[in-house]
Each structure stands twice: as C-alpha cells, then as structure tokens.
Length: 419
Ligand code: SAH
Image (cartoon, rainbow, N blue to C red):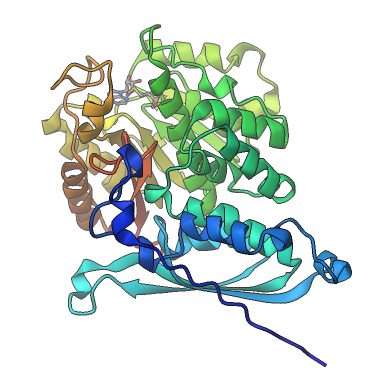
C-alpha cells in the first residue's frame, strides 16, 4: 500500500535569551527567530534527525538508501532574495519548488512583498538528501541573520554538501554566503569541491594601491561572485562591463563559456592597457578573442557600442562620476544602451565605520566623488528605474552588518519590457 507519514519539527525559541548574546550573536529585542525556519532549524535538524542526516537507519537501511517520494513544507522562511532565490537554490537539486510570497502588510500594498516566504518542496530523493539540502540552504537563504564562521563550519558544509554542492550552479553563492564571505575559508571550500583556483580572481586590481588591505581583496572577490551569480540567474549571455578597469570581472566572464560575448569599456587608456595585460591579449586563442571586445569610451556620452547587450555591469563606477553627471550617465545607460539587465554596485557609506583602515569621515578611494548610504542609493536608483521603465531590486555584497548593512550595495535593474 502507499504508506505516508508526516513528521513535524516545531522549534520553541526563547527570543529573549537571544538578546543576551554578545557582538554579532546578539539579536534585537524584537526579532523574527521564533517564527521562522533559519539556521536554528538547521541545528535542530542535525540534532533531531541526526542519523537520517547521516544516511543511516536502524532497521531500514535499504529505505535510507533509496529515493522516496518526499515533500517538505516550511511555513515561514526568511529569504533575502525572495521566492526567486529559493527557486535558484532548490530547483537545480531536482526539487519541484512551490513558493508563496506574502505582502509585507496587507493594509499597505505599496510596501511590497515581505522577505518571508512559504515553501513546499516535492521530489523523489533519499531522505538524507532532503535533510542535507535543508541543512545547508536554510542558513544561506537567511543571509542577514546568519553568523556561523569558522573551521568547523567549513567542515560541516563539506560534509553535508560534498557530493551535490560541487554540481550546483549557485555553488559560489552558497559557499560564499554560508561562510559569510570569509575568503580564506571559501577559497579552501571551492578548491575541495572543484579543484578550481579562485585565488587568481582575488588578484588585486592593478589600479589599486599595492598595500590594499585583505578585507578589500575579499570584497572585490565577493562583488565579482555576486555579479556573476546574478547574470547567470537571469541567463544573460552577452555582457558588457562598463568602467571595467583592469578587467578583473571581464576575465572571469571570459572563462565561462555561457557568456558568449564579453565586453569591457573604460574611459581610461591606462586601465585598458592594464586590462590587456591581465587578459594576455597578445597570446589569447582566436576563439576566445572573438568573444571579447575591449574599447575606450565614456559613460556620459551616447555610444552605439553600448547597445545590443543582454546585460551591462557597472561595478564600483558611479562613485567616480561627478554628481551632476549622473543624469547624463543614466540617460546613456538606461535611455540609450537599454540592456534588459543592468547590474550596478557602489560602496555603502554606512559601512565605512567598520573599516579599520579608514579615518572617520574618509571615503574609500581618493577618486571617489561621493559614497552613498543605502537610502541614498535606493532613492536614486528607484527614480532612475521609474523614469526609464525598469524595475529594481537590491542585494547585499559582503558580510552584512546588523547596524550598517553590507560593505557593498548592489542594484539589479530589469527592463519592464523584459518581464
Ligand atoms: N569595475 C572595475 C573598476 C572600478 S574603478 C572594478 O570593479 O575593479 C572605476 C573605473 O571607472 C575606472 O577604471 C575608471 O577609469 C572608470 N571610469 C570613470 N569614469 C568613467 C566614465 N565616465 N566612463 C567610463 N569609465 C569611467
């Protein structure tokens, strides 16, 4: 017969005791932890279903080893990337994903959707796989409240994710988030999983001073990782990086065949020379060379070479433009180039207080004309999106601080004509 059973795991979390922790482990008095499935749920899964998570069963070894029709229902999951991120994380693992988004407040539709979603996963898998996927991915979804860092966390991730994580299209996002962008640990994890040398990507931008603090190298990596994840998630094939500098992003894009055409544009001839050196233009195989175009130009003048791309990326560039020129920049990028997707990053000024190498009030780079708070960036980006017919969403890059947010802020614009 078809015997089905339901196991329910209910956590009773004492919200008040959470406020007594120290440093980043302390939560606000009013917090969502008692009501959501978060990293606490992962810990509980490991405690309560430890043997199943380990693939063991006392009397039914053959059942533990076989794929079963399984269904998992999670009433409330905090997802920093909404329903879309849930889909991106679970669907590649073979789950039929059903996500229900909820309004932030039914009384105020203008507030948009909440970051809390209801999730139902259906599929045919070993119970161990389902538990492993939940164990690793729940904390990844709940990016901003996740605090695990350390050697034992890397071990846990490799133990739970060893055989499925390496094939996951979002593995970099998962590893980076799981380890909170701890570059040393993340590099080690990726090396284990794919034997890939991502240290190369960490190479300090040629344009930066040589004594760049470690933190900034890590952040440059996190930016590239997040940009690439976003591009892949929307399926952009032809990507132009504007203000490409020494081509650190262009290099990563070129190495990935799913990007069929890769462009780099910068106003600075010196930057383009450095880009050529980094990409070894002189001895690049012709097939690769055909996919690449590098050219000089300015983002504040209309230019037809900016048209026809699936996505424009603009990483740490706007803060180099004089404020009064931003209008011209927006006209060129959104009004003229009109790529279906535009990904933009800029420093989050609020985070500067966390950088030890910065004196109070200082900007991060001598050429920065301004640095924006999250509210300032969002105000500008919302306006631009509205004016040019795009929708925009915001993503954090780097370890998010509970007070001042992430070090880098990202806006992903999607043309309304597209969606
Ligand atoms: N995107 C690169 C470089 C960021 S530095 C990275 O993330 O590493 C900012 C870059 O923007 C510089 O290379 C600078 O030359 C370029 N830039 C500044 N003003 C520009 C303009 N008006 N048009 C195009 N590029 C510009």
